[in-house]
Image (cartoon, rainbow, N blue to C red; front, side, top):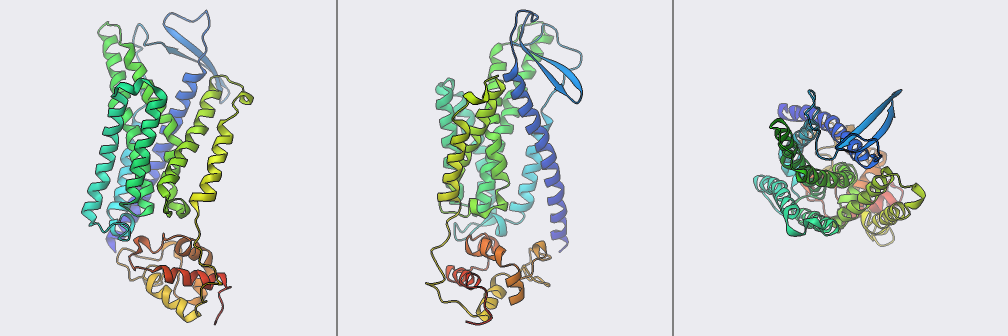
Length: 401
């Protein structure tokens, strides 16, 4: 029990740090993309300056300028933006380890998907993070990397393939989070391996009195733009664990592709708007995002079973309570029997008919319309048992049949 208590505190601490660092990273990333796109050129700019932008915030006015490559002289004080990205990844990986590695049998592995040992699942997980970055980086260094649309399509295909394989390896919940974590690893890899090293090379050239290589800044900007378009999909995939209709789906890997397209469309709208384009001229982004979300909701996200009350005999309340005692009460009880659960999650008890009626909406959502509960289906709840619960709830939860 002591280990479970430690896990909860670690979960809370790493989650809080992850949210704080993530907000800082995303905020600075979005701001600098906006700043870069909002720069304007005019005849009075100093030598080497490619554009400037006036900002107003908190009662003050700010003049922001960007050099085409670098200033002739390095300023005494230079602010770097990197630790936000690093701590986002470190805290995120730590959180993933506490939840999905420590509790691999409950959260990471679904034996109905693939019967893995915890060590096997953890190695596959780490392998996807490393492999995703390596393949992405090779794509960015390949001959067709200069073709922006082609490279974007290749990165899209990489994430789609990863989503397909992950949903056939792990539980639906773990698969979605892993897709988000893999993309997040790619994003922080861009910062750690490309953007910051290139900036350091530019600084080194300035200190040596040399002209910096302009390609270094261009490559960094290229990777930063990728991060910008990937941010919104990653955020949704990382919070997907709260929404089983996203991940508990036979075609959940297709849901990932739609999320990528929706997020990219929205970011493209804002990026074009930051360049000074009038909103009325940006006609296709939001309609496209809305259409894709309609497809996501109507055809993929939620696929209720075809087991209507008319086709299934409504079980007795005694039968329903017996199902709950076998599959729910090990975790959702005053005295839990699952070794990985110290107390009922959320204080939800599912031991009596009264409990089942009180929490019927949650049961329908998590155990009938989806298979997110029991976690990892450790108690091997059958489809017939799920259908029986659904029939009883839809019939008005009678005391007898």
